[in-house]
Length: 345
Image (cartoon, rainbow, N blue to C red):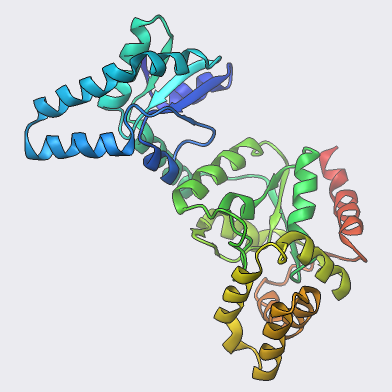
């Protein structure tokens, strides 16, 4: 038989062995939010789930169960085969640990495939995420990267993360770069997905003496930072980076790739156009239309982003932190790495 286990028990087991989390909800439910790293092997497709739900409401519970059995029976060989091809021990879950995960776990058990079922399902996991973010005591000292748009904050964090430094890449978790153009070329995550990714990353580096992240505003795209992280930012040690405009323009072109998403960037620019002096705004749009992206970016920095940053920088408190005046992202990366290296020893 399969085992029913609580989330706490499963997470404890996860520390000792590799687990494969499998979400048996429909593709649209999985797409909306799931446990990070989970695979989706749906017991019912979206259309099948809708059909069964209609029968449940309009006919009877028994009729819905019978139709569900018909659907599962037809796909059973392929369904079992897909699970059998997954190596580690399997943890299955649905929305609240109900019929779909119970049916899946029972079928797998009958075929000799060891399975654990999450009690309470995804709803239990989501409740744990919210409660933990609201109540946890997070010890690592925060080091917070500040600087004007284009200094390569994300590039710096990505490189350090690849090297094993304790980094929280908030924009990656949000699927958004945090500006009016931030969603272009990315897939924005909703609050549930952001919270789950954030908590898992925070727990991953919680034993480190420090953690490094970017000075983001409270909202990044569709996601809102939890109060815990806002407090960490406000009490964190600022790392301020200054870089010439030309290098910043080059980094923005590299990160945002406007040549691939020209029309989307023009549409996004029109949302902020009224906040820029009219002749300058007209010139920026003209440059974007003519594929002269570097010139457009330089004007945006001068007349929109840099003034906004100068204003918000005054709100960050009195901690002087440290400032690095560099020529490019590589120099910034080296400076941050050298500054933080003693903390790892």
